[in-house]
Amino acid sequence: MGGLRVATRVIAFLKIAILARILLPDEFGLFGVAALVLSLLETFTETGINIFLIQLKTNFEEYINTAWVVSIARGLLISLLIFISTPFISKFFNLPNVIPLLYLISAVPLIKGLINPSVTRFQKELMFNKEFWFRSVIYLADAFVVITLALLTKTAISFVWGLVAGAIVEVVASFIFIKPLPKLIFNKKKVKNIINRGKWVTGYGIFDYLYQNIDDAIVGKLLGATPLGIYQVAYKISSLPVSEVAEVVSKVTFPVYVKISLDAGRLKKAFSKTVATSSLLMILVGTVIFIFPKEIVTLILGTNWLNTISIIRILAVFGVIRGIVGIPLSLFLAVNKQEYVTVVTTGSLLIMMLVIFPLINAYGVNGAAYSALIGSFCSLILSIFFTRKIFKK
Image 1 (cartoon, helix red, strand yellow):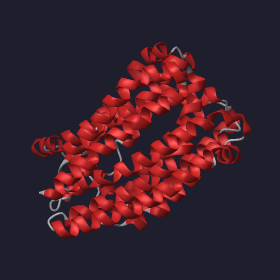
Image 2 (cartoon, rainbow, N blue to C red):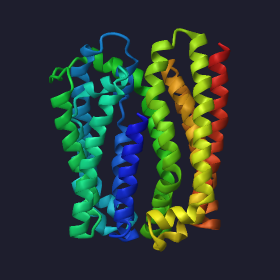
Image 3 (cartoon, rainbow, N blue to C red):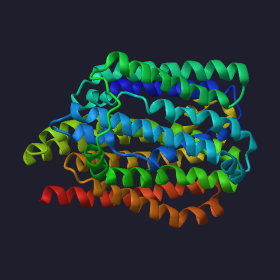
């Protein structure tokens, strides 16, 4: 999993480095708006199917057909909502150029809804080597299409075509290389069970999405497309390296914690080791980003992006705290305490919303970064509280 995250992030950074020299910040901002809409609707319609399938200790194959039907219906719903709401979104952001991006991106969830749900077996059964090759091919397809079309069109539409290509590759690969294959069989009882177990995951997804993206929406609305593009690129450069470490830890520990969840002593020992080693690694990565932002920006983005340095420093600290907060979230899910995850993200969101408008008015784009940092402190406090509560029991 570490190799996968390194490989995909290297691809992502190379893609950003190339595209930053081809496209203007306005183009990044346009795609940022389209991506916000897609991720918003994906989050608000999240069913928690993947987490549910991984948590299952038995009857995995019995739920594959139902999971696929739910996934297809969800993809169709998201596509229709994006297509219908495109004129209103364009008007809200006052960006008429975003319309073709939104119409095209509406095809992405429709395609992704067809993915074989059995892909969760990679994580459930700890087959991380197969996950590596599966995801790497998808990321390479996305990057190749984006860069090729960016060179030809010099517009943000290339980003969306990359998403379409990646989705198609994922669907095809999921049916060729993964078993069992799903069938269009609907089971009302199983759907109800999935929804009931996944409601807290849905809540977590909604509030986590808002926490991660509401600052983007506010920056885009108040300051415009160019500051939004600058802010999003700074976010990727500063916090993603740390959050990727947290993502690796979460992907690996969640299915492992599920397997040992009935052994409290072993679970506590495993969790303590994970916190100690992962936190140290994330702090080291965050420190490098905080000390050398100018060198990192010059190397990756070029001198035209030097105005992101101050934002990167703030978000480097944010990234470390958020990465550490992510460690206990997999523990909460493994012991079926999804509600803890929801409360942590909700608290962070509320605190951030209290401070973001005055901070943006006072400090511009930097103010948005400060608000994210303050929200992360809140989530850290709540995570510590719930972790102690679990092990105290």
